[in-house]
Structures are given as C-alpha cells and as structure tokens.
Length: 394
Image (cartoon, rainbow, N blue to C red; front, side, top):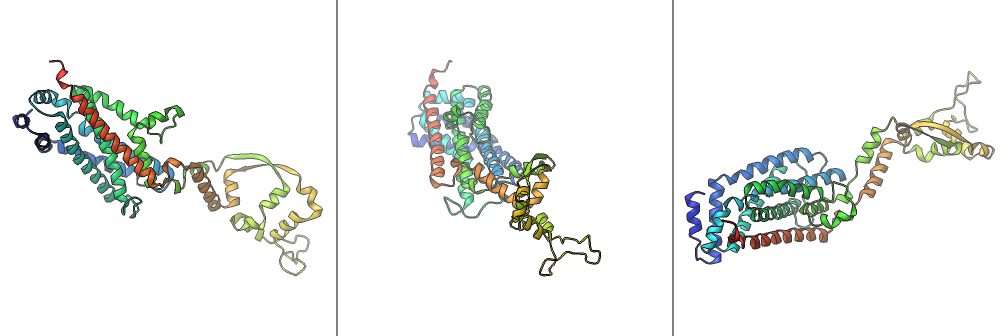
C-alpha cells in the first residue's frame, strides 16, 4: 500500500465517525484516480455496447426479446458490481485490522465504501443508458413510475447493480484473500443467473431460493416497466413458418370443406376469394364459354359452393368423410397468412402472459424496495463481519 494511503489511515485515529467517513472516502477517490479504479467505467461502456448490439432487434418488441433483454441487463449489473468491490476489503485487510486497533470505526469504513460504491454504480448506470441511446435502442419517452422511461429503467439498473455491489462487498469482508474472493465470485454469479426465475425452467420447490436472488427482482422489474404482457410472442409464429412443408393427414367431411370455402372466409383468404370468383366454364356448348344463372349473370364457383353447402339433395353427400393430406403451408394459404399470423400472435401472447411481469406500480415499487433492502442488509452483515477482524490469525 502506498505511503499516502498509510498516512490517510493514520489520520483516522481517535476521530469521530463522521470525520472518519470523510477521510476514508477521500482515500477511496484518490485510489480511483491513482490506482486505476477508473477502469471500471470504460469496461462498463464496452459491456453496454455488446449488450446493445445483442438486444437491439427485439427488446420491448416481443415477449421473448424483452425477457432476454431484461435478463441480460440484470446480468450486466451483476457483472459490473462484482468487479467493483469483490476485492476492495480483502486486498487491504491487514491495514484495516491495524487501523481498527488504532481507533478506526468499522461502521465509518463500511459507510464510506457504501457511498463510494454508490457513485461507481451510478456512473455505470449512466454509461449504460448513454450507450443504449448512442446505439439507438428504442425506448418509450414516457415513463410509468416517473415522467421518463429512461429514468425508470435507470433506477432499476442502479438498484440491481448497487445491491450486487454490496453482496460483493460482503464477500470481500468475509473472505480473507483476493484469491478466495475471485474463487467465490463465479459461484455467486452462476447462482444469481440460474435462479433468476425467468430464463431457465425450474421446479416449484426452488421458488424460495429464487426469491433470494437479486436477478429475480431485476428481471421482474424491467419486464414490468417494459409492459411485457402487452407484447406479442413471436416464437410460436416463427416455429409454424419453419414447419410450412410439414404434411398433416386427417379426415374431413365434404360439408366441412364447403364451409371452409364459404363467403365468410373469402375476406380473409386470397386463395378462397380467387376460387369463388372463378367462372364456371360451359364445356358442352362451345359457343357459350361461361355458364350463366337464371338472371343471365355469369355463374361463379362461389355460387356452386354455396348451393352445394345448402342443398337438401346433397345432405347425405355432405356427411361423407374423405382422407386428405395437406401441408401447414397450404392451410396457411387457405386462411390467409396475415390472418393466421395475427391469430397465432394473439393467442400465444395471451398464453405467455405472466402475472409477475404485470405493469403494476406495486410490483415495481416492491422490487425497488426489496433490492434496496438487500443492499442495506449485505452492508450491515459486512459491517458485523469486519468487527471480528481482530480475531484474524497473526
């Protein structure tokens, strides 16, 4: 540790807690400048750029894209936070122990860390939002909890990052070496990501575990802010499009086939409309190419279909069933691609709605409160753990 840092610690002896917070905080900001702690900001910008490139196509446009984007944003917060503070205490543990014996209050030391880490997390959040804006990630202008959506999102990202930062600070207070801290960190990240409760399918017994993860509340909050339940679900339609050539075998009655080609479906399907508009040709009278009805108007296939569907003489024939093989693509063409797509998107979106992601102010404020509570809890436990620093082996 540089001599300037040692002197800063010595000046904390026998001073009040508030003064010690100011002195220790000043030391942290000097370390930010002179020991390259500022590198966390360029790293945050790089990660935000990679994230924006991945989520820009479908974030806040589809359910799947919003869920993946929310998860990714939460992951970035966790990642940034861990590198902010995972080593800050254990790398100077010997100095903290010596200065604690000389009068340094652990509460002052931890509160100084809380303030300093809050500044880092706020800076990383601003950088994330700025990079998103530079790379043209489209967000609504109007927010749900505040007048601006970016402010809503920024509060959530900050709270996720800060809570994870305090968790990393707790680990740094408990683990005594930097090697041990870096060994624990991957397990913490994997635990947070796997038990986020949104991306991976988990059994019901894991719900109490999920409720203990920061990623769960970050994911829920961002999805709620993005109005997840009002977005379309695109995966079902994409799957159907990839299966267009898949054959389907089944039985259909003549009456069902005639009903399918009825006038009601002509407005939704170009194929049915064209079929119904086809004129009926007169093959027996060469001089008269098109048959006409009793009013002298051209007879169309639609007239024939409607007559066959309602004629009492054909009632028995309409009940007969015929074996048929068609592809999914042919069925889509019959009903009209746009109509089928619209129906699939609406039905799949309704089935994919999740009450956890409802755009409800109580859900968002609840997630914000829990994340803030976790941050304070982790900092408090770290403070208690460091109170026993004198018991470290010499």
